Image (cartoon, rainbow over all chains, first blue to last red):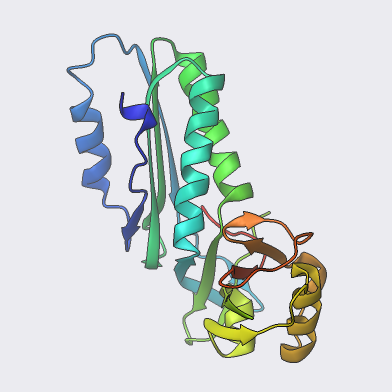
Length: 147
Length: 78
């Protein structure tokens, strides 16, 4: 079963929109699925003291992050009756307007898919050692904090 | 006794390095190492720093030769 296999989560740079379309297409053969839920995190041009964020440079404690992603997957599969789940998170620089997180859950019914998708997003934000350097237009930066 | 220490995010920036090998005394706990390094590098917002020993969040352990200790600022994924 694919749910037991540790999966590669990190992608270098932005998550391309084509990856989302391709992921949807890849599930058309799985006809036991009745609902997909998708979360897309996009880089926002926050304004701080008159300066605007132009990109976020992501870094991570990759070895631990991969372990934690796997634990979150295992917990999600035991808590929710999902058919499959896919997570992609950026490393390196992602510009405003580009995508940095893609969570894709599938189930027979919508509520499970939606609840599982929310679970993944909240767990990822709370538990995975990922860091984001918010880079402003003038090349100064500050470190992102999750709210 | 040697341990590998890794720094991430704003801590790596403050320390000016991402990794170093440190000689620590036998019996030192992870929390003692944490206090020492926070002082050495003047790491800000020390109360929000978490330690992972061999990828597990835990400061109440005695360090062993070859351990990997990571200094983690608050997570900011997504």
